[in-house]
Length: 472
Image 1 (spheres, rainbow, N blue to C red):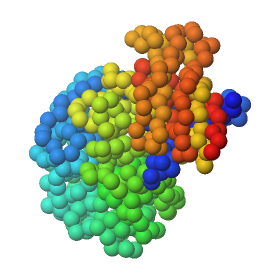
Image 2 (tube, one colour; image 1 turned 120 degrees about the vertical axis):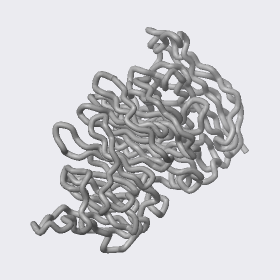
Image 3 (cartoon, helix red, strand yellow; image 1 turned 45 degrees about the horizontal axis):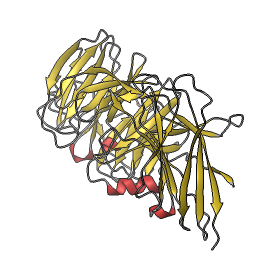
Image 4 (cartoon, rainbow, N blue to C red; image 1 turned 180 degrees about the vertical axis):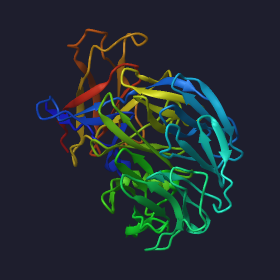
């Protein structure tokens, strides 16, 4: 008998060919637990999504028909679901503000006007201004058809046709001057989006990113001047994510970048980059902070997958909702102490809550695929697997929660029938989680998958194998 500790994965890392390695974290993520803990890393299931509100959504869209954009002010949460724009008051009263005529991507931004800020809405070449629950189109003839909108220092930053970026009047989104525009200067480029970042404006083009500083000279001319640039562009405006002080985007080289001063640090792995390369639908990015667990996440999703980057740990994991190939989460906002996430398909809005173990009532199925267990060039006999997980967590409606353990002989492409291990009812905290007699495996070894669909707290700190090396 040789008891071997198996490495609990800290990130989803599929090799190019799965037989080389198939470590995976699906609907779970790794958190460092310190040198004094039983294990240096523990894998936890994510916080659940508790249905908070449902807004109207209409229109036949070619892309996601759910919550396409959200923006928070002191008095209202503005939600674009399908083609409907809805304002939700602090008391929960919903007012349909407008119905958009087209299906183009939607951008929201607010200025500093007090006590009621102006909220700019840009979609399908038209800019509208919402004040409270009233909306009106911007008709200033000096503003060409806009493509997106952001804000910095009270100005709306509005990219338009012919790579020009207009600015509004200060805290006045309805007025524009024929000369108040700029272009990317260090490397002329097709401007996709201008982000009002923490200090400077970031001008994202297809082949470059340029930083502008607000340096008015008192002459009334366009006040933003270029101060830095990099020859690395952006794959799409909707891949850009701003969360607190972090700005990240998918670059034109297929990597995910995180702003680092006046540069973009690569944070994607080869696994993530391969997924980006296979996307056949538009990739959208968004981010949220889970205040109850202390984690902050950046997510990128398309019609076939969702990858999530943990800003606190620098690790990646995957998300997938019940009976879907991607995650139902789509766009996020922090409002009145809540982290809210929209639905990919309809007008549902969820609150992120650590005490909830489902997604709008659907189970969250966690999958952990461990690195391949082998003794190449020899085969192995797997006598038993022991799991260090949180026991005694059963509660209604999952009175008898189970872990499912299965093995694969082809590197994780396919798995055999699952063994069931009881996690134990509430109070059964000394239960040993174990299962025996898996049989023999050849020199390629086996991959072990541990799954759980029970709506209970889930955490795994260690996995151990009783394994024998076989002779030639």
